Length: 421
Image 1 (tube, rainbow, N blue to C red):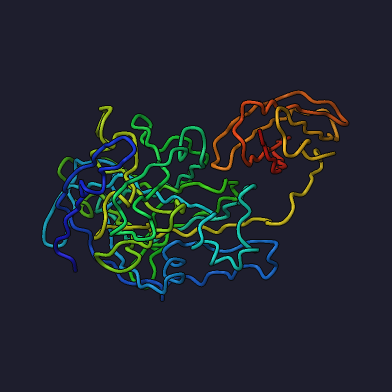
Image 2 (image 1 turned 30 degrees about the vertical axis):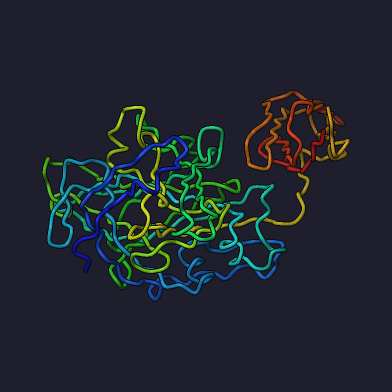
């Protein structure tokens, strides 16, 4: 049992932060050591033998352990939405300081794709993947009041208002040699009014039930999403909602219930994660100084990424996703087909897209650059049955690779185009 680990956000790590902001310096709450629980997990389905179809579980802790032949160190961290209660930290008591966990997934990650198969089998970044289910691991104690407590999963795709900005820390070559002195992450933004991330596309509330507890004492909340489409970069956040009245000063696990999330340091206790430049997969948290901070400075409005904490802190929350994607081709659908891909390709000042509709429909178009930034979008354009064209003025776009998507009645076709000047 760990008795004391300083929750330290070293100032040296933040010298090159994009806005020069510094997080909370020190909070003396220790995580509690969790057991290695691989042996008690439910058996996961193997990936499909048809490599044109990715269909498998993705857990970044497991995949990292396999990729690097490392042994993770597992810990518990209290998760609670308010600070009017106290929690037991081994031999001491303190106020829970984490109010939301986030885990960003980058489907271009070498670690993730190594678990899929060969490079030719990897996720297709030009089209959506689908989350069929979400699960996690934690420890739950039901309070004496008998309230029904809930765990909340939220899914946040990269968009114009979240995961759209790359933050960075400089001076990292000693701790992360592969970083070439700079580590980067996708910023996950927090709405301090709604008390949730910006841009949530799906929310799943899972009542916590002690009957879901595994043999080693860990609870395994899970939910089927029905096939939720997500882009190549997205996040899953986890929040805990007590079911009833919260008495001031109550101790978690007494009158009210408590939940502790399983997290991990990939290379063992007190070590640094293996950082791969350009891989934005990693965890983050809303610290209480974020949740209750209304100023325009510091970490207000943002989840704090694991890279800000350095060693002795969690690098991933233990969350499982069942992901599915048809990796080859982009099948035409019953409403929409491309008569011709964008032309000319490469384009200079203008590109034309010619498509055919089986019936009159409203068509939406979106164009993103290689970094996922939207450079053009238009919704609900009326188009006739038969052949239609859309002209894109590319004169002022930077030279490079772009992906354009046509969307009709929820169906999408995505293709690549190149602009040169």
